Image 1 (cartoon, rainbow, N blue to C red):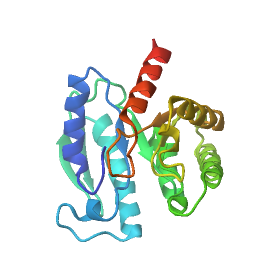
Image 2 (tube, rainbow, N blue to C red):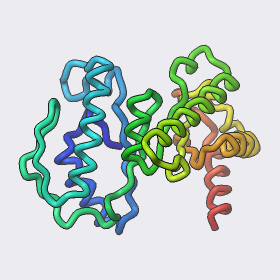
Image 3 (tube, rainbow, N blue to C red):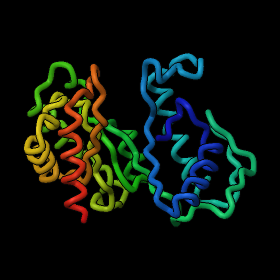
Image 4 (cartoon, one colour):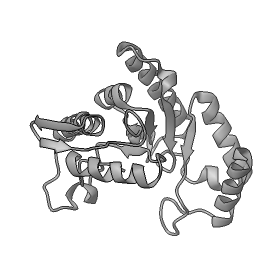
Length: 228
């Protein structure tokens, strides 16, 4: 996952090109504005304001796109710079490896519409503590609608983007992982809503991701069966 909290576009681009080469073009970059709390201060910096975080994210994504598609880039921005940064021969995947852009707000959705090959959401954070699963479902429906509107405004077909729901951050909590049937029902409902992928966390005891590991394994086996 790429995040301005921990990365600089120039060094990240070089690392990604190496990974894309080693994996023979099987890398997708998940990229977001970065978390708050300990994520925001892990390198010893002061936490950024919401506006600065959004500004950095916009500059970060745009510069990284250039670095992965151009042989040499010189750029001087407000937060990042590059001086004839060379990335030859570039990515195995052309014109570059795909971006999965995490976004819920208007500025982030514009970045997803312009640069993303996939869009990632964790739902509406305001509903995490006190919302209901149904409220969360409707909020995600709204996010999908805003994504479609943003894509249309930029002249892009929203169907070109994969829609990824990162589970574990909505009021559903571990409900979908209570059983294989519960997960199948959950996945079917969100597929009908318009999501193309679900990401679930490995069960971690005594955390918000706690779940029966056997259920997780059954889900993984079912997924492999569907793919074969």
